[in-house]
Length: 442
Image (cartoon, rainbow, N blue to C red):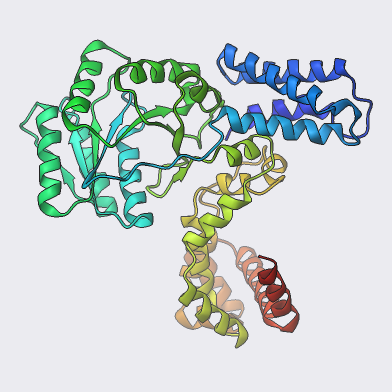
């Protein structure tokens, strides 16, 4: 996420780090490089210029030149300005109304239909809502089919009228259906085009006028950079939307859209899409994103994702097994499944301070656990519960069944043994005391 921008900003700020001599001249030179990094990321020129002017003004106003750690102060100022540039505060979604009506807008290919499903899943799981998805793209039969597939995947009903070619009527009928059947959120997926045109803009404006949505979201492909910002302005002029959704942030994103869109249309980024899975949706936090852009990680989001998969009852059972030295491969497999649900591995590693930069040239496969899972699935129930029974002949059978080598099986058994000992140690007095001390510090 924003790897090129992060690298260039890091290089630009590097000259001010350490204990070297800091002058007004090299502050200006650093900000020149910062501006160049922003322009390379396809940030709006006026936005980049105003950003660096603001940083310079605050830097010189806070006597950066005379502080003991000017480089660190400069990084903080840049971080604060990046946060402000992307909206400053986190802005939630408006869920007032009975039902709440959410209108999705955007160009074809922006990920609008997929994100409609992600949003429905998010509201169902995290907000305990009962959403209804509405298929209002009457031009592409595949769009209706796609929404039905997404709805089935997440267990959410989809309202569609395949013979009706009037999207305004479909949307109105869907809202009536929601009121009659106890749905408290209606998410209306609309048609898009490959480019902004009058027919599409008139149609979505008509839908907007007819259903008076409580929330109108503009969905944009974050990989399109400055084009995304121009498109957002065109939609906002007609719809006056409430917020922006940035999709495909897990791809080769330069960052131009995320950094420019708030300053150009003065509307907050509310959500980001970070992968293909239905769970790959995050509320947008400007401060956390600024941290990630500057290579500081995002531990808060990482912990939140972990907590989403955390089951207290399961954790207690696991704790008892560890204490009795009964932690087996079935438990290990369950832990792997929970980690996988947190998101793609590269995104998770990018949340660890310093890790993203250290591993930037290493290809991290989302199927990193596939070999481990294959080995475990090739074990018998007895072998999973009591790994100590696995002897030479069993290892050969497991390796053959999993398509791996005996060496790989040995490696997993060794790592599992080391992990089990470490977990057992954490359950001992010293480990418990440390955990209690950490809890008191919260």
